[in-house]
Length: 258
Length: 238
Image (tube, rainbow over all chains, first blue to last red):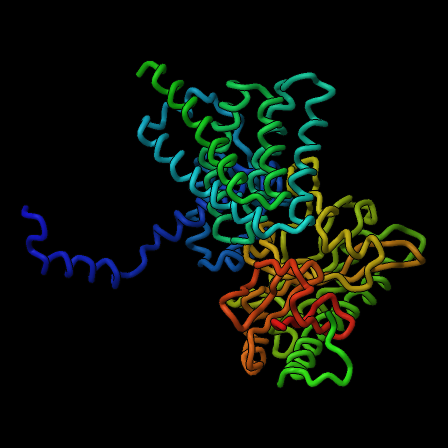
């Protein structure tokens, strides 16, 4: 086909896409995505009971039919468990920590690079805006996460299997708090989505590559730049934090046997 | 700087101060009702309060979420228990949110921080403000990623029973809805004008130079008028 050929067909196709009914499978996928992201980053906790189907459907603004399909998909992914009878209901199941190599294998190198581009843009923009717009009360949660992380590390002198999950979730919380300090709900929602996607892999990369102290030092430097109102520095540090980890993940991915 | 008494202020500023004072005052009036009902509910009576006792608050909470007037501003309202107050749940919110499709719906019930890094609510300003003695707290505007998932304000008052802090009564107001309610009046002012919280963060504005979320760090170069005795001010350029 020639460039720009048959424009009538293109216009027609766009018209069809715009005015076609919104696919109910898209709504199911959106609900699955929202709940799976919340479970992955720890906004919903292991063992927590979800509201009744009617309540949850109302909260999410979808029909109970759509919600039931979404819950079924989440059950198949092992993220929700439904018990019948007295004391029954749907409960959150946080999947066991998966083998990073298995997870990494699901991404092609160009996908990792693309995720890094996307995440670097979001994290950098969020950190810059946070530096411009933060009040001390917005920076306080960042220092709190840094302190809590240090407190988890100290008695153990290193990440034990029990502390790994907690440290990873605190890492995710730190990055979500930076995004929230930007005052942008959209950047925060995008940060939560990216944390659910690739947060655990990036964190493992940081820990493996430079160890906990260096990761903590980078978080400290980002928080300091935001507190100082230095937007350029905050953005550069936040981008570097993502891109260094992505580069390391790409190295690891290239070393994996197909 | 506060506008001087007798000083000829810009037209329509008094109208904005009255409107915003009435609106926000109305939300706090609802919160005082929730506070008083909660204090009665958790008052000492020979046994510790349990979560089921708080169900008596529901008709009141639903009433403050549905209908016109102040209720049209409020997106969520309830009582947040001080950790350890209740016998059967160390961490608990009796929290209800509006639901455009029908009756209000309850937010997740049990928030145990040992199960999630996000659940310790005591550090949020809407909790720490009343805990440290503030009679009225306006937290935000802030990105409320736990509850509304939107840019929000949370207003709160302490609940005290027998001289002991029992938790907070609080309400969520979405920034876009607050802005919609004050913008017509704000537009009447024939100059760039905006409302800021006590930290200088813009809540609503009639100019693109200052929009919700921006920080107005240099109060000295503006005329600042407090909205009654609330932690809010109306600001115009000098």
